[in-house]
Length: 400
Image (cartoon, rainbow, N blue to C red; front, side, top):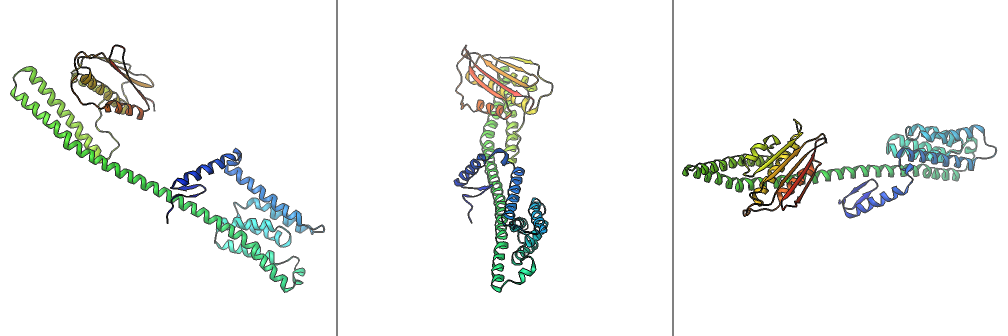
């Protein structure tokens, strides 16, 4: 059976029509007074109205010369409806004398309907239905009942079936609807779990594919760079060439270590994003960047959250990389300022002093930094400076 577009009050499963139904229900609920939207107030209102109708039913048919005990029993039956939500079977038993020896037929029917709603096909429901039928079939006092003809007995029996059967049928219908709503809620939750599992499987497959590509392509290329640097180091005797080759080998080795860690993270599906360097390693980063840097660190707490420290490091790293690629020869000014509520990072560079190299660039680095800041609840801004340079500002909140 398909549940596409099926909607029941309180439950919506799939399909465009389900959303429309939810909006209609929300509109109807919003049209009601705010006080009646509370379940307790709504239940109390329904109970009061039920008792009022039951009392009205007795008051309209009570004869002028009624026996006092019949009036008392009928009134007690009407008042007993206040207990129908907590003690449905006991409430029905309390309404039986008022129906049998009085005029509280509607009170007994309301009590039987609540009993059928709560108990469904339990034996108490059938006992209650039998009692209500008996009260409608038997007339009080019994002397009058004995004087009735067989036709009147048959008619009273038929009317008794209607009086007892209608509340039971309505109660069973309400109970079936409630049970169906629960089943649909379980079905919707099951479908949500299936969707999440499918999405997790798709992400795992994509992560595995990225891990393969990173290992097969990037790792191979970096290994070749390290090998060429080793060959240059063994063939050259100039100190500057040896130093350059050693720097290339060290950077290649460090990059391979990070790459292998990231590949492991991608394959394992962990929420961690791989190895994280912090601002305590900025000195090593600056020395290896081949960029003239002025670094200022102010009021940085001794202990920073791991994610904040790693985000600050990656911000400086990406900015120095962009300076090296797009503004060669320019001086970079880095300012890291801490506080009680946030860590601020600002990287500014002047106009390029030389011609930039032909490096591929897609702007993904700055996009990634903006995403980091957003995930950490911070902000990220970039803009050109008046002297033709570029400025990056990032703010990472410390208290989350």
